[in-house]
Image (tube, rainbow, N blue to C red):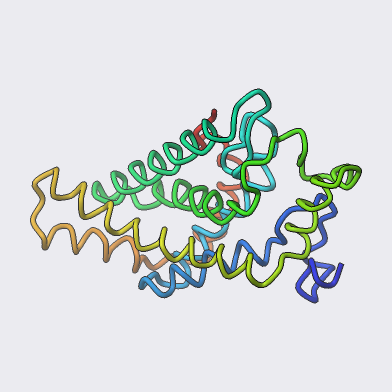
Length: 222
């Protein structure tokens, strides 16, 4: 429990066998900070990331967990998941360029969660439902401990994927801006406005609570 809870089991108590919230939080905050995001902005994006485990944990949302819906093959799931992430990126970039910055956050948060969760290697959803019952089978048990007590190598690979995705986001914004025939200055300013937003403390809380209620509407379903 102390490993799973990062030495804070009272805060990070979750017996359903998912990456501890602290892991997903840090795997998002760190890479975004390296890419120049203000801390408050990174926190809001990370809050949407965490909601994937809290709200999108049924089979219809298998792809954001890098799992395969039952009846699909893994190759199909990989293709659809890649399309899913690309769709999230496009939606986020479009929102940033039109100045709808709050709208971009859920798409980025969910996509970050998706790439961080590739440790699941597209296992069939029925074999890893994120519950204690997973431990009844060898594969389910392996998946359970991949979440609850990941090896450092797994965390390092998830961090590398998150860093790559954070960089890819800006690339996508620039590509889309050029297609819209925006000037380099306009694109730079849109990116800066998004990354450097200043929130009132009460607004941060409202955005995080909104993530709790509405994150389902931002996730592409299989």
